[in-house]
Length: 76
Image (cartoon, rainbow, N blue to C red; front, side, top):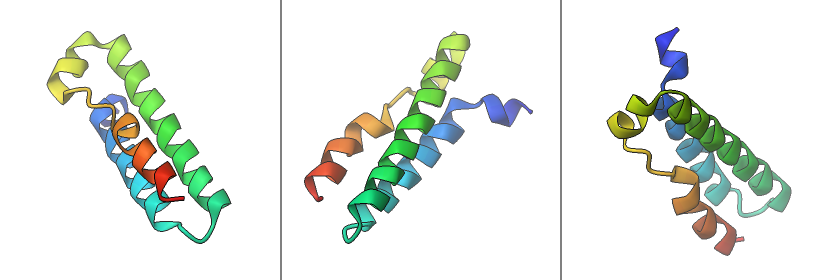
């Protein structure tokens, strides 16, 4: 169960959904759905980091959503 509490795992998922959002250029609704999922995974990672201060430094809290969200929106 320790893997379920690993913020890095959820940041990877957020990055994957951001990539899918960037690829969904023909469907604004699909793109927005992927962005919403990425945001939720990023929030979950942040919550897990706040509950375990060690994880923020170990996983390098990067904020994947914040880095890529503007780029994905600008393509749409």
